[in-house]
Amino acid sequence: MSTYTALDQWIEAHFDEQVRFLQELIRVPTDTPPGNNAPHAERTAALLAAMGLEAEKHPVPQAEVQAAGLQSITNLIVRRSYGAGGKTIALNAHGDVVPPGEGWTHDPYGGEIEDGKIYGRASAVSKCDFATYTFALRALEAVCPPQRGQLELLFTYDEEFGGEVGPGWLLQHHLTRPDLMIAAGFSYQVITAHNGCLQLEVTVHGQMAHAAIPESGVDALQAAVKILTVLYAQNEVYRASIRSQVEGITHPYLNVGLIQGGTNTNVIPGKVSFKLDRRMIPEENATEVEAGLRELIARTAAESPGISVDVKRILLAQSMKPLPGNQPLVQAIQKHGEIVFGEPIPALGTPLYTDVRLFAQQGIPGVIYGAGPRTVRESNAKRADEHLDLADLRRATQVIARTLADLLQ
Image (tube, rainbow, N blue to C red; front, side, top):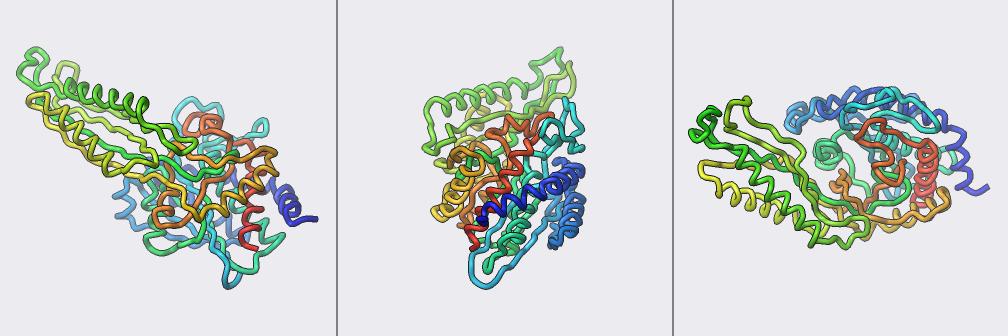
């Protein structure tokens, strides 16, 4: 029997246990916001301990957590050392997730199984890959224990807010420095690049006035509408004239996701704020993008007498560009993915942004691969009834285990 077949069979034999592990992870909420994630880390560490895997607990100081807009974070590291020499490979998945929202027909924290699918918030993004990576590691150690190198499971809790107090914090404090890394993703493609993301909060200041005498005030909402019109027109320029050379990524784009303002129906609004999200293709320079947006907003605001504007950066997530050293990961995942899934696994870019970029920025080659469908939409990630096909979970675990066997032998 080949090593690969033995790994596949071990995962098949322990798959019910793997599904129960994922169910337990789904049942502890990690809604972010508010971002009270330490209880999930405690539960995860206890479940890992029951499997004989000791997890280091790294609580982030409260002041840093609150400054990031969260309530509590304890990041976890499981280190498995196999001998001197060899590479250190990290497997990183995040446990934080957006709140469930409305429209669910399944309990978002139930881990319910129906028609071969498991339902629940973070079932697909990315508590599933806590299970993928844990059971791939267990299969490897049971079937073909490496003789050298090291594996690290990094279970972190700040992907939704940018990753700086998740994997960024672990990197900053020199708690991890792998040679290669794989981060949570989907099964039918291996992601080697992704968009960056700039989020800005724009506050437009005018002067409140009674609606009966509007000329006595300065309407902040009218000025905000002018700015929004210019921004949306700029979005059309992005779509029409800028193209990425990375397969899977198209063009930059801009969205406004939140608008607040005014005090009452019969009052001319004196302040309006909105938050915008600007996705940047890998070819763009984030500093130039931000400077251009700030200049466009300021120039448009200046056309309205009595209006002033403040622009505050909320988030800057750099894009991820492919690093040459990622080829062993890409090749192994593509080879085994095609065998296990029965179809080619392309290497692509994605318009999403992830915390993998934090490793790439430090020169650590990485890719995104894990359990999930071809697209985010198929899984209902960040929508009601998020779910994961359990067949994808099993097969992705087999691909990761086979890949680790190649890289650590």
